[in-house]
Image (cartoon, rainbow, N blue to C red):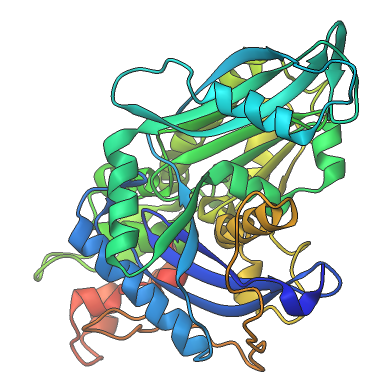
Amino acid sequence: MNHNEAPIIVGLDIGTTKIAAIAGRKNEFGKLEILGFGKAKSNGVEHGKVLNIDQAIKAIQLALQNCYSSNPDLEINEVYVGIAGHHIKSLQTRGDIVRHDPENEIQSSEIDVLIDNQRKTFIPAGDQIIDVIPQEFYVDNIPNIKNPVGYNGVKVGANFHIITGDRNAIKNINRAVTKSGLTTKDLVLQPLASASAVMSDIDMEAGVAILDIGGGTSDLAIFHEGILKHTTVIPFGGENITEDIKMGLGVLKHQAEALKTQFGTALVDEKKNNVFITIPGLKGMPAKEISINNLSKIIQARMSEILDFVTYHLRQVSLDSRLLNGGVILTGGGSQLKHLIQLTEYATGLNARIGLPNEHLAANHIDELKKPMYATCIGLILKGYNDYEHQYKEFLDKHRKVEVPKSLTVEETTPNESVKEPNQIDVTERSKKIKFWEKFNQKVKISLIDLFKEDDDKTI
């Protein structure tokens, strides 16, 4: 691939907590050069579904505006969009075709017909097929063929993994993108996008489960011997943990988010039985003390529930520690919880690690992009390049020249306010505790919201 002719691909991740837009192009070494990066706080999206289109449009446009600010030379028209949510389902099918000319070798056009035929598969009313992914092919009586092109036979067929979603939910995503002045190049299931960003060919061959823990949902994709075996959307994510903390400890939502990001851990540490967090009371009420262990118990309970889903789906496809030598790769914003690796290994019996989207990035990328929460967006760009290299889609802007910015800045603002630095909550031993009101009266009185305002970069 000639680097000068490579198209600029833009990934748009419409999540429950954030919307990110990243523009990239492959260099002569096959690595992604990041040409622009923008993000914004997500509005109008719950559990992966666009519910308020007007709010979602404003958030998308703000993310694009920040992306343009990072590189004014960019011109974004088409985007690859990630999709997830409770409405996503999958099913397994099997199909084949009888060849018109069995004396000649199988051509890629015949495989395209075989795949297109699966789009006629019966699915429940109100659903729509998002993607058809071939697994093992077979030619006549020869099974387990990865690529049948070049084989010779009378009949060619395959097992397929078909991903479906609610038609109205898909329309809402496309409508929000269109009304933002963009065209949806393709919809890509988020766990598949994340998987392509954080795993290698060796991982696929060894067998691996990718768990993308987002704000509204956790997405699972299971690979074995280079084949996608299973996908599912788990209806819990980082926002559920925040709500659990809010209800369990009787605090406000932004306080719960602050507690999670600053002190949250996925495992209870008995050594911290005497460690408490002191937060101010509401409107003159006494300060509140919260046990670190109680906080950890709430987080561990919800994360264990998510991992129970993972174990269940591994058993559904008969894959366990003996077959998934690559273990579990954790990615997404929720993977940043402390001690989550240890809890995952205990719950699943598999080795676990954090998946970072570094392997496919050129050396110019900023530290912000090393975070697992951007794996989906990086994976969407890689999906676009896979379409380009295999000529699955037509790209019109291949010759447009855009230089990599010397210093890629990250901006994330809302229309009416700028990002503020977070204020840390005090943690004290009970024996050494300083009364909150003694410190409070010595300082200038500020509002409770400002005291606990959190930077969105720390959102899980």
